[in-house]
Length: 506
Image (cartoon, rainbow, N blue to C red; front, side, top):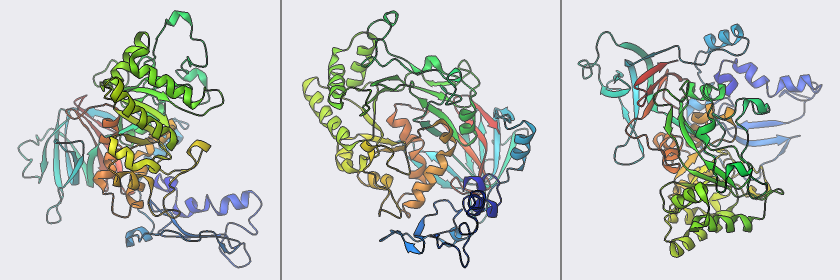
């Protein structure tokens, strides 16, 4: 799907996962084709296989159906044909010209602009953290959005916004496109890592105090801040920016219990000194509770967390855990396991009684969160799912809710139905550019019960809320050309930055 979206012909895109690998591996005489005499390895799809959200209705291997009772939802007619995709010819030429490393910074920046031919605007609700949509199409005529110094000052018909639209302003025709809030990425070391397997390009990993000795020079009770190691203009960071991710929240890279303090930063910034580069120097306090052979027992990790939140930590470490206990900063705990999550909910109750704690807990990972969805909703604990399309990667997170066609509901829909605040995250830096793909998939899989506004909040306002980032007064907006925000025909062409008071034209 993504290869087709970025310009690969639909026949070649399908062949790349069917005919081509079969031929290259020497199985072309029996696999890779649907024709007489070949193995009956066939997938029946609920929509065109290149359509976003395409899901198998049945899978046959050697003619034997593999799904005993598949769950299926009806898809509209437009999903049954080859999807229309944007034109990426210039990007392809640049990739060749620059030997695979084309420039990713904006082509130009302006303070103000007029967006023409706008079909829909998705705005942040002032009263709460939700998203609302406003159609600018009236009687078949699309509308206009005027942005001055990074702020939307008018949206409506061309006549309504004429008084704001100075003739000298940059004009950007969206061809029936839309403006949406900027997306927020969390879960991967964006800004701390350039090449995953090349240590010299990374910030490095924290000391893990409960399994290794910390150098004395750091002192007792030290804690790491991700802001101190930020690297700007990384390719994954800028590719995320070009796909609508305007803010990344990044925790220090760690492999032990204490993660440290995350930072929220602008993904389109060239360095930390420019306006709007650091959105929030300290966003949240992070810990990980994992059943790793190198780690102490889960019980030991919970015991340590209880002690730190009760005020028994030293130095800066103790200070920040007290802040988390008082609700001054979110406590973000990484775990995939439902039993650990249940223990954390018990710990919240215990600490509220013993030290009057007011902890704002967010679960990250959350593969098994659906198993205690009711309790999470009742206690106001939110979840950032780092695998929006679940798979059982570890034993501790094996009890997944896979979604269609294996289960009636997907995990996001199920959690939302129990009043859990849900955000979508990632695990690897390259995945940042796919934020809108993931949110769109959730909306499609939900079969209409998750609207576009809710899906957008999964990758914007909900993530901000769960990680303690407030951009309500200086929001970013993303301009989409050629279609609505979740249409495969649309493409990001500009970013409106409230904090930087400018518009980046890509």
